[in-house]
Image (tube, rainbow, N blue to C red; front, side):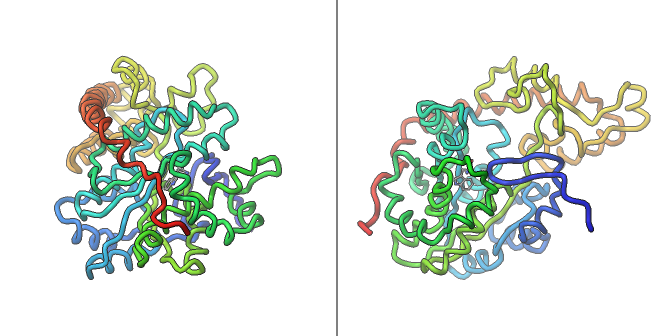
Length: 382
Ligand code: TRP
């Protein structure tokens, strides 16, 4: 018998060292091949987005028919979301960075779901005031990545429920309790809010088709951990008369403290860079971050370091190396021992602090129009 997998990935729990190829196999998703990337590149023009060229997006469902449809004049829409449990950290930007890029390149509409209900149900320590507060704060950060105010629509669950509910009623009837229990691994103590919630996460995938009374294909960029929700969406789509949403899945960005650390001295918040961390905190967290370096400078010069296990390298890779050439240089000089961890961290600190300044300015500009993107009324009564 093969060894059991020593990692867990569900929307509500991610733990262990993830074997991504194995996860694709377990979930039954397809590999994002160079051929598919080339097809997307051809449609999008310019340079491929770093999240695609560097392999962070690595899996998909039905991407090819969606792209072929687009090429033949059948535009799709994008859908992604965020469960607001606190301030965003830089790895939460992975799906929205890709969405903003796709929207700019392909001119497609974007639907964002902010699930202040889900996070309240999922995290015992959070108050309703907190999830609602962070929902709006997170939305500002997301919109500041460059979404087009005219083509971007937001379902803020507690405030958009009237717009979602007529469709949620129909979706919920198609999903059985035993299926939810099996897909999410819920124990008997799970509150019934969370049992129902997956219906609400499916709704935006069908909403434009429902609203427009015609087939509008959907593409969902998301972390691979969210796939279980959309397996359900895809299972029920045809029965409701809507197309199955296509998906493109990213790997999870590792924390700053390294895999499997169980430090009691470092607070959990030191595991990530929050978008509201002041410059000195960014510096402190990055200086303390886990790397793939050697015990001594002499050893590192001689043997080189290991980028693949390094949390600093993961940040260069996901967002902060602005060009693929810069990323290749960091990788090469790290491996060869030319680049020492202290210098690499110094460069990254500067780069991240520059992003924070630019992001704060962009964020200020969206506050004025963010509210206008929130959908509050259903397109039709039933
Ligand atoms: N469940 C997601 C979270 O916990 C939020 C979410 C809602 C989402 N709709 C989505 C994520 C669509 C990706 C795609 O953050």
